Amino acid sequence: MEQRKRVVIVGGGYAGVKALQTLASSHLCDIVLIDQHPYHYLQTEAYELIANECSMTRVTIDLVALSLSYGEHVTFIKDTVREIDFENRCASGQNSCHPYDYLLLCTGSRTAFQSSTPGLREHSHGVKTLPSALSFKHQFEQRLYARMESEGGWCSEPFNVVIGGGGLSGVEIAAEMADYIRVFHKDNTLTCDNIHIFLIIPHEGVLEGMECYLIDKATERLIELGVKIINHSRITSVEEHTLVLNHEKSLCFDFMIFTGGIVASTLTATIESEKNKKSQLIVDEYLRVPTFQGVFAAGDIAELRDSDGELLPPTAQSAEQSGTLAAQNILALIENREMRRSQMKMEGMMVALGGSYAAISLFGVIRFSGLLGYWVKRVIMRGYRYFLHRQCAKGMDKLSKTKPQCHTGF
Image (spheres, rainbow, N blue to C red):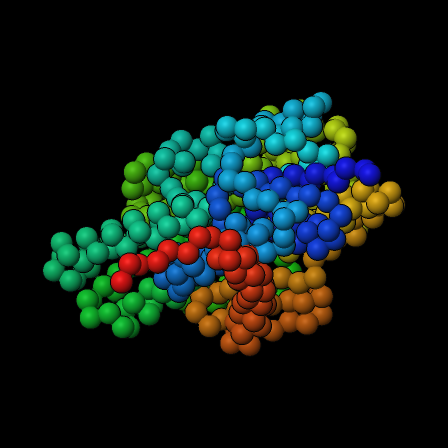
């Protein structure tokens, strides 16, 4: 009898989770999911977390329970893969080596803190990981509290929050924080109406490259919320509480978030294969890494293109599509079937714009915004989380049946 194939997925983000679901439901192979954290971080809801609109439990999915829910052919291992021996087909972690027949790399991306901008990494926050988002949230509230305490409840001095980058993440965070501050002014008994949000963008407007409807709605909403948009400006240096724009104009800040682009995870630095300027792996039309046999890549770690050859933006949607396709092609190889070429495309875009407001474009023809957009986005995001939580519950039920029961001696 032929031995079952072993598929190793490195990374439990949107691409990795979707690949896990696709592979596990087939029961054709043994699957090992490896991630340095025991949770799947719902990065698309990070803006709500840092603006106190939700708790940490709302933005995490337990990868241990999720893996358990599929049965004995799925295993989760908490480890950090440092390098890969492609010749001997083994992914090396901190303390062990994980052999594979097929390898799927889904380790995502990180914030691109450009080394050419002095002080940027040291004095700004990223929000692409849960620890960084929680760190910002905690420090922001501590600083705001200290300011109010020192001034007897009156914030007479400006409290400036700077967000660098006018892409999707920067716009959503700016809008959500501005709305949070507006509610804070309205509801809090401590008078503090001197908080300002600055959004710094290098281009003419926000959301460059997206359709005009989303750009217009986002711009209108940001202005309505009081966000100060500084366009045609590049951050050229950063000190502890001051940044310099275009080498000449300075701006003081109390907190800074940087969302100005991504680069692939550090794992790609150890992989001798073709990459783009963002260190993303160049994959073929089947999402294989051409240099190595049996190796695929999905999500932000790979340069993804649509059916017309155009670059896809690094979104949860493109990550999920690529994770599914890569998993389907691995199953095709296991069953000696023909693989599918990539036919990925963006089916729509949703932009959260603070409070009960969002702008949505679906299939390039259906567009709406405001409260309706907010509810549609909320239903979609909650649906994603709900089905994963339901699957996790099955895993927790299995775990509770295998654990020894503790009894008190009354």
